[in-house]
Image 1 (tube, one colour):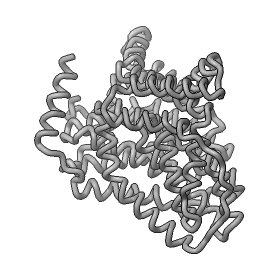
Image 2 (cartoon, rainbow, N blue to C red):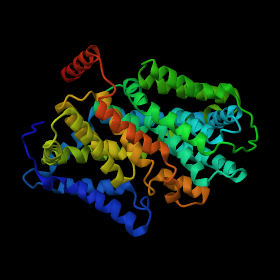
Image 3 (tube, helix red, strand yellow):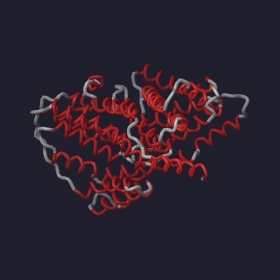
Image 4 (cartoon, rainbow, N blue to C red):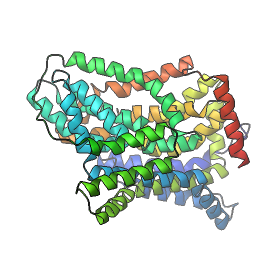
Amino acid sequence: MDTNNKGHLWALLPFAVFLILFLGAGIVTGDFYKFPVIVAITMAAAVALAMNRKVSFNSKVEIFTKGAGDANIMLMVVIFLLAGAFSEVAKGMGAVDSTVNLALSVVPQNLLMVGIFIIACFISLAMGTSMGTIVALAPIGVGISDQTDISLALSMAAVIGGAMFGDNLSFISDTTIAAVRTQGTKMKDKFKVNFLIVLPAAIITCVILGVLTIGEQANITQQSFHWIKILPYLSVLITALAGINVFIVLSLGIVFSGAIGVVDGSYQLMNVIQKIGDGMAGMYEISFLAILIAGMVEIIKHNGGIDFLLYKVTRNIKSKRGAEFSIAGLICLTDLSTANNTISIIITGPLAKDISDQYEIDPRKSASLLDLFSCCIQGIIPYGAQLLVAAGVASISPISILHYSYYPILIGLCGIIAILTGFPRFSSKEVKSKTLNMVDNKIE
């Protein structure tokens, strides 16, 4: 991209339309999820197609479809569908319940909040969904608070914090998939970099929760669990870390989960097929959002909107550090506006990629920054789905949870420190390998 091109402000009108529709409906109705986001994006895309009369409508449709059908976007969509299928099949045969019950059976009774946080970390890492984790664990958190003097808000904050840990790091999380595909890196490489940055935040959160709830105990009823039902989650984590192609990883996970369910009687064969369909259907909205956003962004880019943003964002940048702060700022502002970290990454990703290319930011780092700061904001906005669901289960105000939202705040601080210190530092061999891979990708 020509960074000397100042672009055109008017080209950003579709973005403005989307934000006005989404935010306006949320403010008027008091519910930021009242106005279907896919309708808002469709209307914004229609505005994009109506703009720039110098280009014929047929040409604009071609530009839109070219962006919507980009190889990275299509790959992202397929991964979304496979991730949804795996999550649903594993959940349906009892993997979530067994994981929760196993974890509760080993948690010390005097470290219940620390235990809940760690359980949420693992479940969200395995399931790839913060919402599913909160739905599974929030009732348990409420039960612990009922039996102790632990604040309901603190209990919900522990669950949300752990849920955002996995949302940020899981190989099958939609935020990870979006960050990795938009930045052109590998999941395992992004995971390693991201994990190193947020690990201190998780450790400090455990210490804080332990200190705040020291001496508090509750009698947790022991429930049965089955080790074999936990194995699909472990297999996905291990094979993904081993660098096996994500298609193979998720496909094996689906087959493994379905086979266990059939053998132990949880499923009949057709039930497995139905669960696969249900899981994929659950990802239709985010898949179509990715396609529509990509098409709209391509038209905005053609009209000079991305050039304008890049010029405005980078004109005062003097260093790689400044560029990384710009990426962090962009994703934070977008998530504050959309209240959805996956959509924020899909929208901001192309611009972040341009900035990282211009200032030679390693794609592992840019992908980590996008995911990390989007999860930071998502974990502290009271109108976000995560806080709203947890607050609904506990019958408290989402605002009350913010006082105890240690983990989301700490990962933001860790991200800032990582930018200031240039952490993690990549060896010259790693940088050379990354450069060669980028050249190979361009050739292909």
